[in-house]
Each structure stands twice: as C-alpha cells, then as structure tokens.
Image (tube, rainbow, N blue to C red; front, side):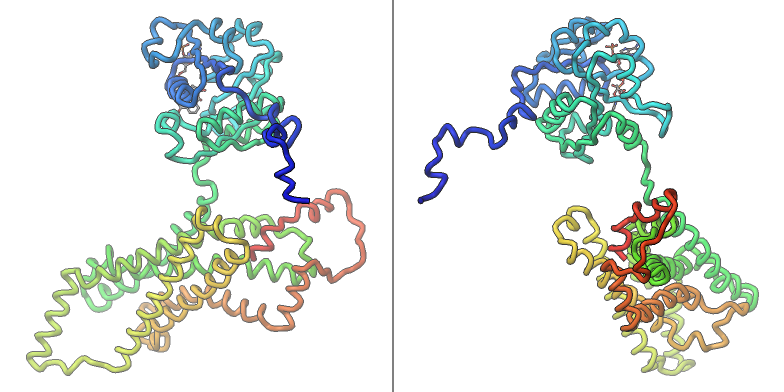
Length: 494
Ligand code: NAP
C-alpha cells in the first residue's frame, strides 16, 4: 500500500485541489493594471499602497499636468479617458455628487470593473446607496462596493492602525472576487458582504458612532446624577443646614467617591437582570421558541457594555479611595485627632469591631475589582476569540455572577449596622448604600429562585427544546414570525 502521497506525481501535487481554484480568486498581479479616477487624498493614498503591493497603477485626472506632481514618480497620471482605457479595474475615488461628470466616459467603462469607495455624510442620506447609484449610471460596468471603511490615513500607514476589515459586495461574483484578492494583497481582511444591495449597510458603517454604547452610557450618566445628588444632600446639604458646617469641599472627591461604587454596583446587577428576566419569560411561556420583547433583546445585547462601564466606575472608585488620605482635609483631620489624643481629650480610638469591619470590607473590595478586571480583559475580542464557548460562558456568566456576590458583600460590610442606625437617616433619607442594594438584591433573590431544583430542572428542559404545550398550534402568518425570528444567541447567553 504505502503512503498515498508517495504515489502522487510532482505534476499532480502542484495541481489545485479544486478544478477551477486558480480561476476563482488568484490573479496574476502583473497582468492587472489598476486605474484610479481622482487625485484627492484617498486616490493618492490608494495609489501608493497599490504600487507597494505590486500593482501597475494609472491615475485619471481632469487636470493631469497640474495634479501629476502630487503622486510618486512610479505612478502615471494621465487623462481620465486614457486611464480607463488602459485599466482593467477602476477605483472611482470621486465624491458621489460628481459621478454625473464621469458620464462621458460611459462607453470606455463598458464591461470594466468600477470600485465605488465613496462614503455618505449622513446615515441613509439617499434612497439608494452610492454604489447602486453608480451602477444605475453605468449599466454596462460591473460595480463593486469596497474600501470605504478604510481611511486615507490607514492606507498610508499600512494596515497596522485601526480595523483591517474591508467589506466588499457586488452583483458580479467575478468582479467581487478580483477586488477581494486586491484587498488581501494590500494586507487587509476582505469580508464578502454579498450582493450590491448590501452597499447601503456598508456605507452606513463609517458613520456609526458607538451605537451599542448609547443606552449603557445614558444609563450610567443618569445613575451617576441620581446618586451624586443624593450623596450631596446627605453629605453636604444636611451638615450645612442642621449643624452649620461648611462641607462643600467634599463635592469633588468625597461625594464622587460615594457615587461611583453605587453606579458600578447597580450597573453590574443590570448585566445579570436581563438574563433573569429572560429565564422568567421562558418559564412563563413554557418554551424557548418565543421571541423576547424587543427591549429585552436589546438589553441582552448590551450586557458587555454595561459590564465594562461598571468596571470603569469600580476602577475609578479604587483610585479615588487610594487618593483620599492625600487630601489636605484628611491630613488636618488626622492631625486634630492625634493632638486631641495627645492632650488626653480623646480615648484610644482603636475599636476592634471597626478594625475587623474595615479589613473585611477592603478584602471584598480588592477581590471584586480583581474579578471585574479579569472579566473586562476576557471581553476583549482578541482574548475572547482564544476561548471556546464553554470557557467564555463560564467566565462571563459564573465568574461575573461571583463578582456581583463579592460586590454585595463589599457593600454590606461597608454598611454593617448603619442601616439600623437612626442617625444615618439624614432628612429621613436612608444611607446611599441601601438604595444601591435594591436592584442587586432583586437579582440575587431571583437567581436563588431560579437555582431551586424544581425551577432549574424545568428551565434546563426548556432550553434543551422542551415545550409545555406539545400540540402544534395553528398560527396566523404574521405570528409565525415570532417563532422563526428566534434569537438563539439571546437565550444561550442568559
Ligand atoms: P477629494 O480630496 O475631494 O478628491 C476628490 C477628487 O475627485 C478630486 O481630487 C478630483 O480629482 C476628482 N474629481 C473628479 N471629478 C470631479 C468633479 N466634477 N468635481 C470635483 N472633483 C472631481 O476627496 P477624497 O477625500 O480623496 O475622497 C474621494 C472619495 O473617496 C470620496 O467618495 C470619499 O467618500 C471616499 N473616501 C475617502 C476617504 C478619505 O479618508 N479621504 C475614506 C474613505 C472613502 P481631479 O481634479 O484630478 O479630477
């Protein structure tokens, strides 16, 4: 028998595995002359990068003599007509508004590949995408959308900075394949986005400004303002009104440091609350094949952002806490205490219970920030990609929940007996930490309920596909959507 490879002839070994592999995506660079229409920022960067990647370049300009000096000598700048006649693929590095000025080149562009790199100024600015608009103006050409997500700067610096992905789409498979190959040779990661109709989505990509962060940031800001005002009333206004003191110096550090842990704590519980709600929905519906309400779906998708904002607040709280003794007010207070002790006006301030409380309180605080840091690091795409689903789920779900329990213990040891001390109820307002405990307590109690063996068993069965009603129900076509649109990720991430 022997090794089958040994029986292969050298000729057979160099033959591609797929019959048409060579035809599909590998083109001889030397045979391809790439044309670029336009001599602006993008055209210059693109031309330089294509030359570095081994392509022959010809640039077409309305004013070749004037604009030729803007390019390196290796790049030929000529008239628009000559450029399109000599090139196989033409990058249209011209703004959409000026596509009409290219109309007289229509016959020369017949059958050629036109790459639309243009961007819009606003999301969904026009009814049709720029690429579709170009295709309608040049029906005889094969239009490909791509490279609009790459800035002129990234083209200049190489694919080292920013995102390396280039989304590409076209109605012509062959044309798309050629542009994909060019993107790959330039050091980018081409992503096939299908037909030209996807151009609308691709053109919206560079205009997005952290869409998934909007709600979490607003929520964090609202929580911050609420807790900050609450802390000011208790820590500043109350002593000023009742005791005639002047504690306004506490506003920048002390009050902020009382606010940050509350925001962090509530945000962390909001990471786990939607999972609890999803479980309750599934238990109530007796199936996992029914869609969650839209708000819950969106909330589930934004848990990572909520968690990272919680970590940010916790990290700032740690830094603020470390800086507390550095304040001049803290030093004066310490000096006064020491001198009062020396004069015998005060007794030894060592209170065993307080010492232990502080030790345990700090212990839980350090542990919580450690676990939260670990969670934040594992949510980075490069780290998350190196984990399998079970590892990722274990860290984000189990360890994340552990962080919530540790944080709760940290808050409880901070509060100790304060919740039962009437002196702590300034203007009849309960201490800030008791307010911060409300949502996390609900989450923890709900989790305990879901862990009850009878409830947990049912939930596991539901998530494995069991349905409380085994009979097929007739449903109207519009309701059938509820079942077909089921978002598996939302459930599996609970
Ligand atoms: P630009 O600096 O304003 O250059 C546009 C070029 O279009 C001009 O240099 C001009 O070259 C040419 N052009 C052809 N016909 C024209 C006409 N009728 N009126 C005015 N100019 C005409 O723009 P750019 O920044 O290079 O952007 C070019 C395209 O790339 C745009 O669609 C843009 O959305 C897209 N893009 C740019 C970037 C970027 O970082 N800049 C990133 C992604 C995508 P001639 O005078 O030599 O003909």
